[in-house]
Image (cartoon, rainbow, N blue to C red):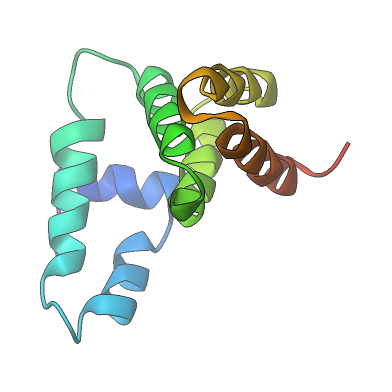
Length: 121
């Protein structure tokens, strides 16, 4: 298992994510879990230049615009965005901005994911 700063960051934002990836895909793709952790968290999220809140706004926006096929990843990244200090309103506004680029259905689906995470109000 990789011990890089990315691995520590991944575990702080998504506890156990490496183990989940290893359990689901390790038998098909040995080393995939470490590659994902190294690539996403060490080479991208842990980079200098943008704070984590900004990185999660960008990630949530991209996943929203890509549409419903990204729902599992959107859920994980909304949860991580909340952990790094994004508010529910900031996430909702980020999602709504993507209605312009990804369409209303994509934005509404993403808002439904946010509601499921934060509780229906």
